[in-house]
Length: 212
Image (tube, rainbow, N blue to C red; front, side, top):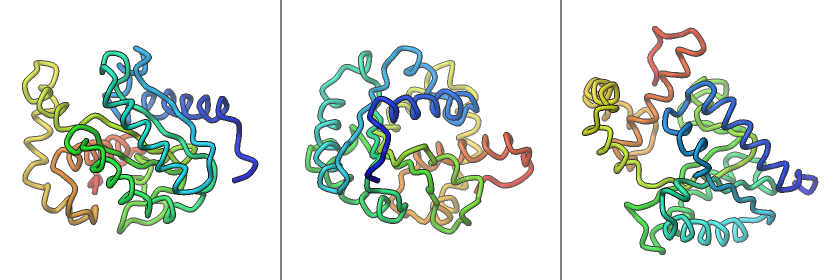
């Protein structure tokens, strides 16, 4: 997109989306604390092709791995140019995972996609569950391993509600994996995705509808 907004505007738009949607609608209960503490790093790729984004992804992954979680808990790599089509952006994810592997960061960091037209496999374009991964611009979310967070919530007193919910979801994980259409997705990511979907249905007033 040649006329994409300058980086400062792109970051401001993304931060506004984070505050109003992700945090404001409680789509992710774990976003508020790092946002309040200034631990979310924003980076904008000004290139408009795969190689430019993958090169920057490599640098941002390494920077996040090297940083203390107290200083940088997570990162958002935003790509406002060249990835208007969701399928083209989605095709990049295998290469993004390959970068994680090449840096020997499997099990330490992972990459999650966001896109204005994000659509899960097997869903209609206007399915409410797609909103969990829709953002103002194509974005790669660099995340410290969710499994570590899962283990903490399974032990800490603040995780009581999470433990109860996970116990209900665990028997459904094989079905959820089939619905999502990603046989390689781990149990923790499946659980978090189902929780997000359930929150969205409640927000829309469809609390009696299945999340997936």
